[in-house]
Amino acid sequence: MDRLPLELVEHIIHEVVDINTESMPCDDDLIQTAKNTYEVTKLAGVSRLFQVIVERLTFSVLYLRENRIPKAISILDRLPHRIRSLRALRIKIEPERIDQITLLFDFLSWLRLRPHIAKKIYLSLEVDVPSAANYKDLLSHKAWLRSSRIPQFPFDVYLQFQHLTFGPPPNIGTILGMISNFTHLNYLNLEVDDACCSRRRIRDIQSKTIETLNNVPPVKFFIFDTHGFRHKNHFMTLMPGDSEDRMASALRQLSQRLEEGKFRGVLGSPQLFWPKQLAPEQPGPYWPDLDCIDILYEPQMPSGERLFLIDGQWHPNQTRLDEFYRAVAFAITRMPKLRTMNLKALLWWELLTPYYFHIFSFVVRGKVATATWRALPRYVPCEEIIQILKQAAHHRDLELVVEIDSSEWKM
Image (cartoon, rainbow, N blue to C red; front, side, top):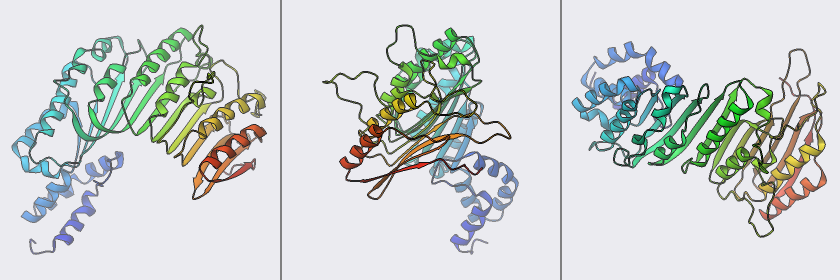
C-alpha cells in the first residue's frame, strides 16, 4: 500500500476525515470527525504511509474543553511531531474557577513555544459566562490582567463570549482587556442573553454591557447579539438625565474601528449612526475601513417611541423613520470603503397573516451604488435623505440608483 501515489492516498483519507483546515472549523466538522473515528482508526492501520497522513489530518484541528487540556498537553509532549500538523484549535470553556482560566493560558503559552508550531494557526475560543453570584470574583480576578501569565499570542483568533444575564451582571470588560493580548484578533462575537426583568435590572445590564463594548480591543469583524424574552422595559433604556443613548453611542464608536460588523436585537436608534447633537467645530463620525455592516433592530427607539404604528399592519411612522434614515445617510457619507449595508426591522409576524417587513440595503457594485427600501407597508423616504445619499455617491464617483419596493415577499 505504501507504493500508492501520495495524492491518491491523501484523497482516500480526505474522503473519510473531510476537515477543511483552510478556515475555522464549524460544528459540522466536529460531528463528521466523531462519526468517522472508527473508519480513521482502520485506515491508520493499513500502512505506515496511511498512518502518517491520518495523523497529519486528524491533528490538523483539535477540539478541546477545559477538562481535556491536560490530556492534549500530555499527548503533544509525548509525540511532538504531531504539532507540525496543527492548523486550528477550537476551545470551549465554561469557567467556574480561576485555575481553569490559568490552565487555558498556560496551555496556549506552552503551545506557542513549541519548536515545530506552524506560523499561522486559527484559534476559536468560545467562553460561556453565566452571571450567577459565584462568578463575580472569577470575572474580576487579577489573574486575567497579569501580563506575565498572558503573553502576546500570534494566533489568528476567533473569539465568542456568551454572557448570560440571570443574576448579578459580571464585569466582562476585564476579560476583554486580557483578550487584547491576542495580536491577531480577527473575529469577536459577544452574545448578551437578557432575562425578562425589571427596568432597574435592565439598566444595570446595560451599564455593564456598555463598559464591555468600550473595552473591546482592536478587531476586524465584530458581532454583537442581544436577545432573550422581550419585555416592554427593554425599550426604555435611556438613563435618567441622559441626553444621548449611551448604548447606541458605544456601538457607533466601536463600529468606526471595524471592517465588518453585525448587530442583532439592538434598538432602532438614529444614534447607532450619528450623534444626537454635533457641534459645528466637532468632526463627525468616520468609518475609514468599514466594508460591511448588517443590523437587525427592534422597531423602537431607546426613548420608547416607535418607528412603526401599532395598528396591526406596521405602517411606518414617517417622522421617526425619516429621522432614523437621515442618520443612516449621514453615516454613509463618512464610509469611504462601504460595500454593503443591510438594515432589517424585527417586525413580528403571526401565522395566517400578511408577512410585513422593512429592509434597507445600500450596495456598491462597480461604479453603481444602489439604495433599496423593501417594505410592506410601503415606505418612501423624504427627499433630504435621497439628496444626502446622492452626495455620498458623488464623493466616491458613483452613480446612485434608488429603488422603492413594496411587493409581497415570497416566503
